[in-house]
Picture 1 (tube, rainbow, N blue to C red):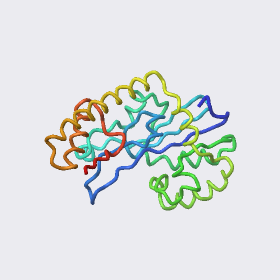
Picture 2: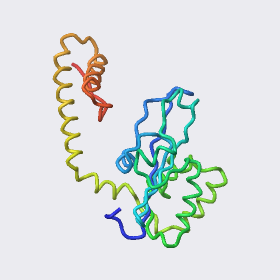
Picture 3: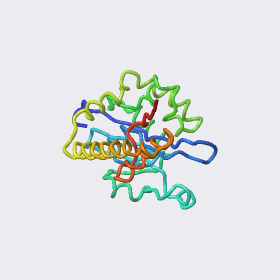
Length: 224
């Protein structure tokens, strides 16, 4: 928040669960900027950062035993403050109320939001998935009133992410080592592999075997 003007607020949304069909979901990947700002890996969440007092407010899914039975444990509101250093935490369904308060506050001079929340991002899914039908219409009017104060968050976060901390450099170096080792082992595996799909699977297997959560990009495997 030190890099932003005084009287600024940041609002960022998490990534969303994507489904192959009906209730069969893909492995979740957090939205990059949200992950950078919070370190919070769960979907259906949001963060509000306020330069006044440097406050961090986290919005997330409440604990639900039935839900967790299928998708794994979630942090829950009570643990979010202790585990992620939030100043306060609330259920996700309280976000619209907080947003209406922020966007109508005349003292809030700069509102940095995700592209999915800005006027240009209307065609994308984002904030509107968390608003009730009535709140969506109200949000249109609120955002119009806040016109001129709403700014793109991605540009500011991009500047921050361009400079890597010592810890980030260490992680990148480790990722490079894993990638190099996986490529070398996959090249050796070409003597056994019968299809390009087998080579791609072997590369991803080697990355996972040595500690990578996922590939940074889709492997391009072609023969001929």
